[in-house]
Length: 422
Image 1 (cartoon, one colour):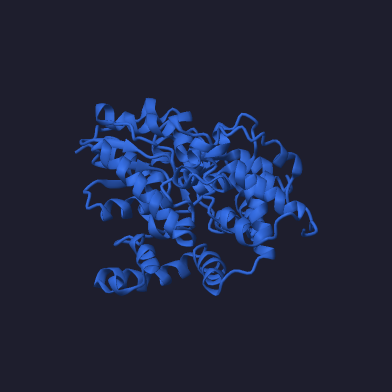
Image 2 (cartoon, rainbow, N blue to C red):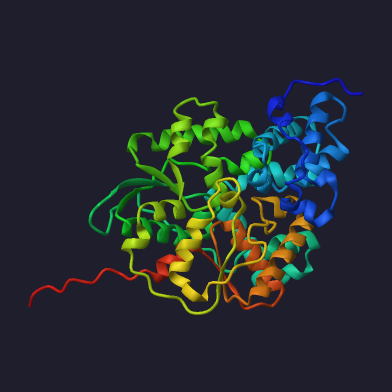
């Protein structure tokens, strides 16, 4: 038996799991494998076994912890309120400090994910050869793992320079909000960020986008580097501190759930809890602000469905607001998606670190979308868009995938122009 090391789990939180099994039908990996070790309660047992020294930080324990998507669907159905996401992050932090990974996994996690993705300039440079390989057809000669990663790269990558201050375009002016531009969003979905600001301006808000903001820290937290995640949190709190914002808006679900956790990450230091309480998802804020009652929206054609991003539906418990917004445009053309809140397999960088399971979940999501006959899939997270788009392309489907901000922005009627007197 291994001697227990320094505690990394809050044992009271871990013991709050009563192993009732209500989480099983909500866990994507358990749905696919039927393996108890790939269920939330099974993984909590493994976490406790590692903490107690009954299992080494190796083999079985690491394999099943790695296979967890971190989607937190289990939290949404847990009758005991087990904070599974918090337990998972602390366990992964412990694993990365005590487990020796293969050279490829070290390169993927410590270099690609931590040294490239959070930095826009580096990400843009890294995407150039990937886009060329996809455009030229050279990608078909790559190993299967590389081909899967390449399938996620969009044909068109569009960044955008966001204004530091963007003024409200309607009266009455309702206040001032901050905007988180994100990492992947900033590089690959620049027009979506601009559309998000347009929507907020149309709702009556001035929008502040501090240039000194950094990665929200989600990429580091998900890969087990909590020290770096906390550094990002402190930097962002400092970036927004001078601006006296009514709220801080984010249009990427994964980022949003991490931003709201700053109080837990930093143990309530440096106004972290106050900052986290101000963070609102774009859809959450638009509905709260009365956007649906003031905006004039043109209806869309074709069948439309909605996929729940895990960290919006499960971590933030936001499911109705985005549907209300989509239905306001789609009307009778809206169709429900079976298993709408089951993870698509993206899960941050999961589709890079665990490509086999990610592909299985991508196929499952694609089959459900095809069942709806939808022409358009709306969602609220960049990773989901890339993952679902790649799955539909593999299925030779013509269905399109769109961020909810783009969908709403193209539907909103511009304010009437005032003709100057002749």
